[in-house]
Length: 219
Image 1 (cartoon, helix red, strand yellow):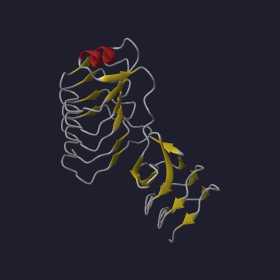
Image 2: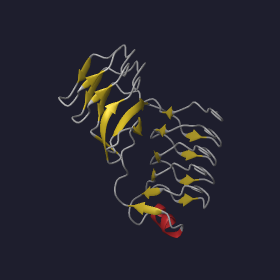
Image 3: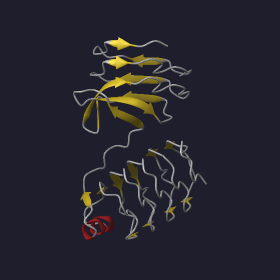
Image 4: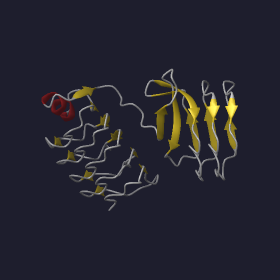
């Protein structure tokens, strides 16, 4: 359906989505970074996210029972996959070449056994929250800036930490054109809001700017 969509960055579904199946090669070689699957999903076919090299994390919905062959093959940036108790079968090649992967799963689950047998890192803790932000390490002190927002939420809270790094800035045009956004809260610690950061957010009514902000750009 979306094969070779090299500019596709995010995928989300409506609140009452009835989608049950994602077909094979559906997102083959897309540059998608952020995917939020609906709870209605029951089946994800083989090769569905094959070669999605920018995908970093994903949560498998509770209704899914199988992870098929090469579903996430060559997703070289994939670091976090949450797999529920409902999954009872995982192909040996489902996560081929995902060298930095950690599987988050319930204790004594099929996913835990799979991870042990394949020498994949796993954890019984809750998976890190999947945040719809692209970030860049842009400061010498190791802090990060938000460079792009991929979500469609009405209310957004910009956190003070992402992936263990402090958020220091909001890049140029990071939220530009987000026409669903009505309210945004920026956490303490952010110092820079750059040019056109919220340009064209036509429904934005409320914004909370912390005392730490030292610079607000034009437009």
